[in-house]
Length: 118
Image (cartoon, rainbow, N blue to C red; front, side):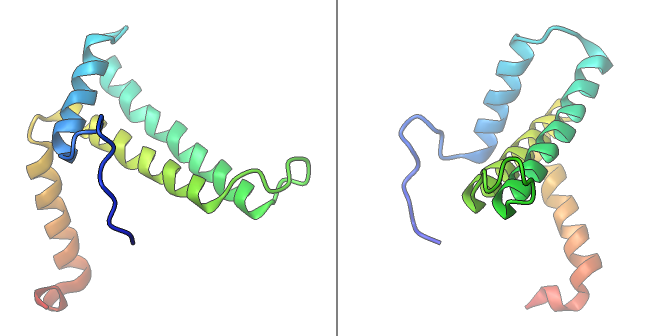
């Protein structure tokens, strides 16, 4: 992995970016309440579908399209999934960072157990 500087118009802090995206979506929403939450969660399915499309395209598995994507495209689509998930989580709670940190710690302990102390 190379050490690259952030583009000048992208905040360096992931969490402030997630908050900014949440605020932008909130200011431009077309529905309210649970419907808005449902749509943000459903957006994940759309993004995961785009990952699948990119993988199929990178492997050239669609004979009609051939190789239509790169593995860099797959990386970008996976990033979109992560961002979309974090914005959906932010829609549920303003404590997004803490909720994710605690959950990752639980998954790490459950998956790696005492090996996670290394």
